[in-house]
Image (tube, rainbow over all chains, first blue to last red):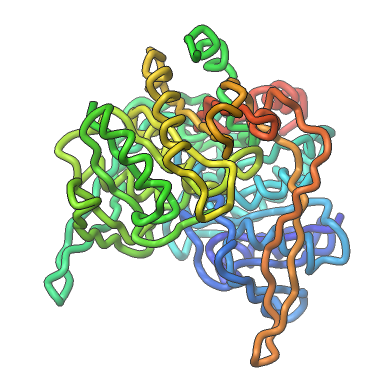
Length: 253
Length: 253
């Protein structure tokens, strides 16, 4: 099984390296990842600027390409230009930090998996529920591989749907299992910090406050908080079908 | 009705100016828009870099703010910091070029409307089916206002759903009417152009080829191609509920 591996933390991130080690067991892996960190780029693609591609010897063994773009750019250019043929699986991650709830929309990690599904390839995003640079990515990557081995049994995976997987940052024995979840849609609690630079100019920095109280355990956010691996099927049809009926009832003439 | 106006082509784009003129008739308008073009940034937000905000006198009359960020950043910082209170409506556009089908995912214009819906405010994105810098944005803005006046009758608009509106670039008498549509999910046909720079380094540029044959007239793409105004309700729950059942049937242990 030919695998394309990417991420949004950049090609030298430890989460990618750990995942690479595990994916070796499933098939040949080509790494095509951003040359620099691309967090919160959402589903951005590069139109105004061209892409540069640098061949790198990844881990002393693998073929790798560092791309001057976003995760979605990496998937596009890998499939269109860099790989000999389309991969059978696109894996994105492991991201440092969870991608649950509304944050799924801002996530470069998830957008790589979505881009795969747009291009008709199976895609999966892995994120770790930790912001600690020294988090145990090796343990997380073993969990990721287990999830992948199960998920490969899903026969309709390529049908415009990818998987968004969030992994608890817990010792293996404390992981409570796996839950199939929906995306949490609760509001973010965030504010901006107003600061003044050395030249007396004001600037703002987005700061997020997590103070959500009750979490639904059937959501990605809730399941992860309880110590489960969360697996959410994600698609790229943003139509809200329930509203279509509502809107038909309005007068548009 | 207090209105926040933004876009992704930048604060000095003619599409924003034209929309501003029409929105005046509906209520006080504050412009908070990117200081430079932000096309195809998707739902990116700025985490790694801070935001700068520059007050500008917009059109000699209005209060305006140019932000060193993405459309989603503009909506966030406007509501959190710049406006005296939450607006009753967030309008994004008019974008130069349509935002239909898969391109909705890459669109900064649409992401501003989505961000509004995340923050509990009515949001609407307007895009024009033309790439001509001299397109008739005034005529398009009049159409946009008509659509808005009808849409304001939609009582459940704030319920996590925004509207993605695409306008034909046609003389008013040739516009065939308005269609409520779903997002087209057909594949993009695209490739990369490989070029060599003056220093003999290779670079790539994404080039899109439109050669879709049959279009479903019930989709945004199809309705617009036939000369209709397309209105699609868009939400931010990316869960593919149909797959959840499928996945439950797999063995995950």
